[in-house]
Image (cartoon, rainbow, N blue to C red; front, top):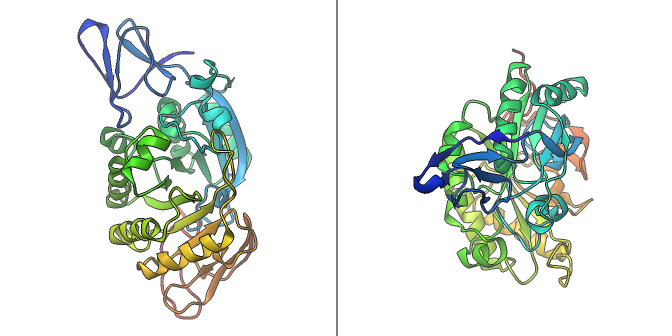
Length: 341
């Protein structure tokens, strides 16, 4: 069903201003915004993908990736079709770009109540709104998240970070964690490769940190586009200045969508990027899409003691004593164990 959208303003001549993300689309009657899933019908903005679930899986939370948020737990992961960015290298373009590329919005009609029941039945600790951009199915995400909260589950957004300040304030009462893509530190990159801008993403990261929501940041390192040591250092320095305990995930690029002419990222580049992150003052830097690399593991930022060993998305050992290093008793940041109510 089409559901009236949240976060929009009526304008003259049956136009509407969507204020869900930083595009702030002014949408004429019977037209959609940039995302292709929010349509102005006679002066009222509707969500076209409400309850149309295009993907749902029970994932390890490490796949989000979140390494400091209930490690080893299951996260019920859901998505609806669409995105407000147009990344030429999108790793999930078949569903994120579906509404714009094909003019269709596929998905199975599943209610928020049914989604929460599936999460509970599967012994998930969290519901992750992921695979596409959760902002563009915000009505479904919000209703599901509020129900999940009432059942003792936590909520995670895996996001490009382009949501508006109004949206960030609205989600404050139900969002527990997020992984934000910081795709580059170049506004030109964002404009050419994503159809967006850099500054709103930086503001989202700072705002979430100020709100006390646990965040981790991911950068997909693309050969020749955002992989210079200078740019990687700028990203690391920004994260460290915001909060040096924010984990940074440096992920290996694989050719996808409109960027199939590039090679995968050299593993040496990711290893060097991890060193750059530590030199910038970050306490936790991880390599992604590089199974078997030492950068998958968590070490105490104080004494270097191995705390969590990983192989891909599998936890091989967890030496934490609740949220502390067993050797030096230093607290490790994040939500690292399930607290009793």
